[in-house]
Image (tube, rainbow, N blue to C red):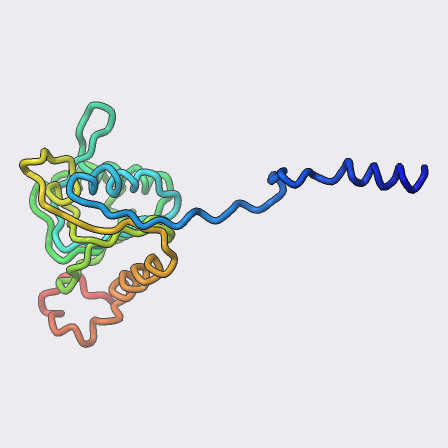
Length: 200
């Protein structure tokens, strides 16, 4: 085989410059999305269905929030139960004890009792949803029907927030959530007498 034919054979085996099959996937494009009012339901709460590994929820108030599954409305707790059954780790921090309807719906999904990791912290006022530690919602909306759930315009709060995958913002949200989760502020809190779930 001549040198020329060897060189030609090597050129034929070389992938064309536009062939990206052997290249690592490109990182996702950065986005910062302003979320207002009813978009909290469609863009934020429904995003929870798509998580693969982790869902972290931080909310001050906690009430029944309903979502549409097919043509039927059901509690968002049903979505969390399905995530747990798929092996997703779900953590919930809230500041108030939930209402009776929330508790009744909680009892409908036995997997929540052992699977849902939960902490009550009366100091929490942040509203965070962190998806797979890669995207975060940071805003004003509680996990309630009027804040994020399936409500008509006349019964919905005026809410605003940012949904982003910016690594710096997501890391900051993760760090704040995790600090509360592990009890980093409990020593200086001053409200442990009102905390039913003292973090140890």
